[in-house]
Image 1 (spheres, rainbow, N blue to C red):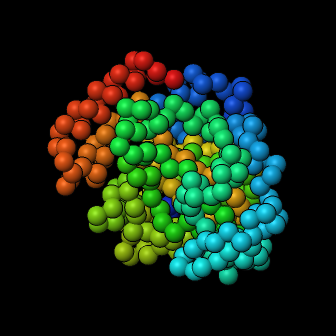
Image 2 (cartoon, rainbow, N blue to C red; image 1 turned 90 degrees about the vertical axis):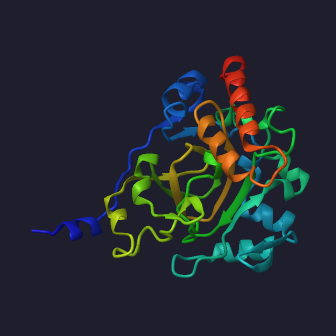
Amino acid sequence: MNSPVNDVRNGPTFSEKIDRHEWSQLGRQRYMREYVDPLKPVIITGALEHWPARSKWTFDFFRDRYGNLPLEVDGRQLTMAQLIAEVGTSTPDAPAPYLRNYQVEQLPEALQADIAPMPSCTGPNWLDHPLITVRESLTFTELYIGGKGARFPVLHYDGLHTHAFLMQIQGVKEYIGFAPDQTPYMYTRSGDANVSEINDIENWDTSRFALFGKAKGVRFTLHPGETLFMPSGWWHTARILSPSITISINGANAANWSDFRKDFCRDYMPGRKLPPWFVNAYLLFVGKWLALSAPY
């Protein structure tokens, strides 16, 4: 008979079940009702087909057209062509450098145009509303390029409790997610409430992170042309199964506005001219107004 400690060390446990829907059949109202409002992950197909990137963005395209583009990846200075060459030979034992969280606004304008407009399933995004963007944009569109075996380096949920939308253009990724109610098992990093100290899901320290063995999550793959909605507060990380190109964008709306507002006032306002209580009241007002005027 196994002891409780051994049972814990066999965890965490994962389900492979995640809903997948064609966007044209799902529809916005059902999407909001069944997934966004209850903060439930879903994979959506057919939402990226208007993007030129879906047919243009291959590894050969990046190598041939933008091979001289300078990049910094994990402290290394590389050109795009050098990165693509290493991605092509990447293995789990010797993964290529993983370009991640690269701001799309730093790419040439022609590439930015290849991923516009954003899929309908990424909205409504209140972070783009003029009442929120007066000071600066809080929406970040980011590029990820990596080879087989590369992993995102941390288990986390997106900052400020924003939603994450992951749009797969090339390759296959495996994602792992844990719902917000699993937070007691995530061992949050001191000073970073949205980052776990556990940086290796497969080979975690069973003595240091014993409670992690009790966690229950979901494990699934994301394929080209699919968009993953990873809701606010969901812990997640990923590994690349085949050479991959991904675009991500964050967002906020009625489903996560309360948590976004609290995080923003706590993390962004200390030391600024406006007092946090004033900004909190302003964001509360904006959220109520947008919920009434433009809920979907």
